[in-house]
Amino acid sequence: MQKNIINTPQAPAPIGPYSQAVQAGPLLFISGQVAFEPATGNLMTSDIPTETRQVMENLKAILLEAGLDFNHVVKTTIFLSDMANFSAVNEVYGQYFTDAFPARETVAVKGLPRNVNVEISMIAAV
Image (cartoon, rainbow, N blue to C red; front, side):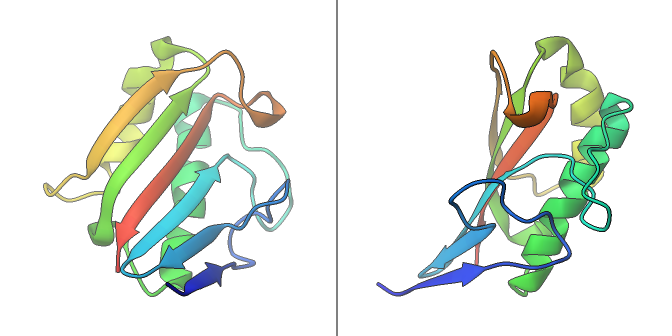
């Protein structure tokens, strides 16, 4: 099976040895995104809604680079530094989908890269 690497300057460059996304057959696997603003490289962590919105915009940019949108997303994983942020993250996250929501899990973790509060990864069907 051939795999296609997806990268766009409209989303933050990886901060390690990984790609923004990899398309393998009919599936697109998007690496976990945090709230880096691509234009400045700054973390947008002033509050949870702002942070979540930046994460979702980064994911949107990668989807668009692959010729997809949120309607193609079949699975997401949300990592939170604190489950107390669940409602605020959920509210912003839900604004990016129609009623055909993808499957999802949300987990609290001890720490995230650069001490952010939210990281989200996705799988989309091409």
